Length: 231
Image 1 (cartoon, rainbow, N blue to C red):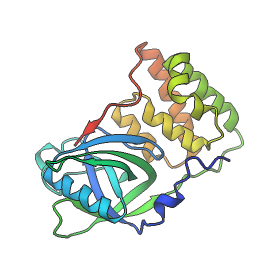
Image 2: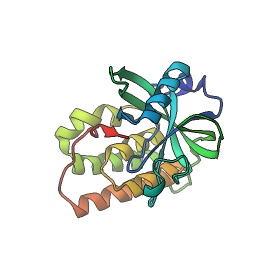
Image 3: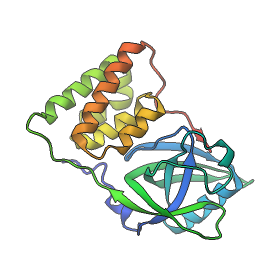
């Protein structure tokens, strides 16, 4: 099995504690690449600290109704999030950052730590994929089904340009599902549901269902990759 998407090296400096970067409408998945523009002072400091330390942060989705508490450390977030690693960064003269965050692994935020930083820091547990399949589940058939659905949604040109190399590689099914879950223009609520599903069989079935519904409901094709997200 290919180790193209192995996260072992990125996790060697992870000891269960990391800064938390909450965003309202973004869900990061393992193995996905997210461009970010960092401009709030508290998050500039967070990025400076993270880059100087181990380049790891957690991207967590803010819960609906967070607006009144957005500028505090108490804004509600979903407990299942994604640990990411800053793979490229550019610090501008005014202190802002442009960077690329690579998703590494699902995490469950267990507790937030009380410290004097302006940003949030939490203790968390890694969530590993559950890869035991039922007797009724044919992993290769489901991989083929995902490819067929992606062809219908993105078209052959879109697949060749963006996803074909991944879909035709021997990456694990869980990894493939995460890449597609991030790439496809599902509502953010559905992306959160896919992130929270540790079972690869169920995640694959959910993804196939969401893709089929997306194809049925709209013939429009959204741009890939996703545009830069700003905090």
